[in-house]
Length: 178
Image (tube, rainbow, N blue to C red):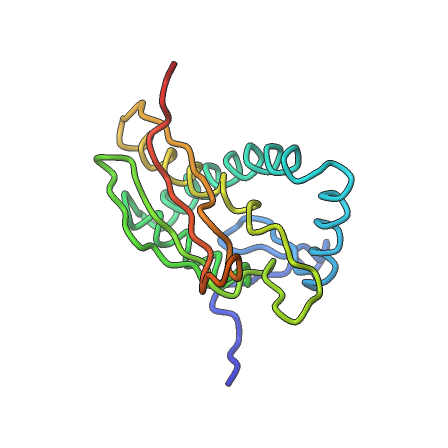
């Protein structure tokens, strides 16, 4: 059974640009995106590319959560859950909040059927590291909106299929200041 997207999509007739909740969006074939991602990964290496994506993803998640919180009058865990729901609805994978504690600035997130998990491929994969900064960007925006100066760091514990894992797992924890 399939169904139509649950996100509101508007298309500007003059420019052809797509928007959801007034934010510009792209709709591209998965193979196009993954092939580009893998090409950059091969050129830069996983370690360097993952650092670049962490920072860019962090900033983007912060911006998105700030916009959506204001637009939909959301706060706290509602923002985080809305963010993961929208990621799921846009085809990145099926995200689930396993735990979320704003007071401790911690969270665990699972992802199943990630856009990067291709079980029928010969490519063993390198994981869903692209998502990692997204979770801290979301958490930190929520903390900031509540007046907290605490900041977090996220890490990928494992990806779906890694050593037989049934889902990808990410953890968010307070950043240790040196």
